[in-house]
Length: 269
Image (cartoon, rainbow, N blue to C red):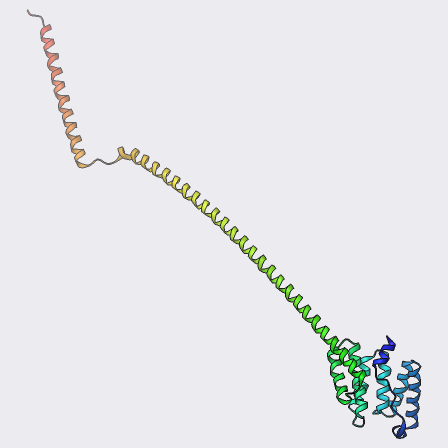
């Protein structure tokens, strides 16, 4: 895997020619030692040497680029991009230097499984150097990875939509079942209420019948106690008068009979 990374990473050491003549001897020494450490795969020591060189000249294209490489090999991708970016933004950097910096920035994103950003940087590198086969290869690799991610995302979205749809269907089904259950409960309750109302009506009718019967009986029992009308009083007076006369007549007859018997029993002298 490490060897594969070295194939696709633009690893180079900028020439020391006229550029290094303008640098201090200390900076030159730091860069040379850093390159030696890098070739020995001792990337942490190489990092220290390149940082020492940048302490002498912070805008050094060579020191920034090589430090980016040392950080990349330690999988410090974000830090490495910081130094590659300094090369890209350096006005003194050549198109070749910037193309290599863009290439390596794209490689850091590719290793982080961020193909969208990798594609952008490889594309910038190709604009500056269209004939770079390594950049073209990595660009195609990043596009393929991006396509796979998009397909995977679409499939995931489709699965999520299916799950959401199924969940919604289940919710609707549960809701429908609940509504049906509620409807059944309401019908049962309505039937019970109707039965109870019917029983109450029948009971009320029975109570009314009993009350009506009691009232009729009471009325009949109270009839003798009703007050007599004027005609009834007059008739009763007549009957009483007739009765009185009959009693007087009967008394007279009884008296007469009694006298007749006494006269017959008298002695005839």
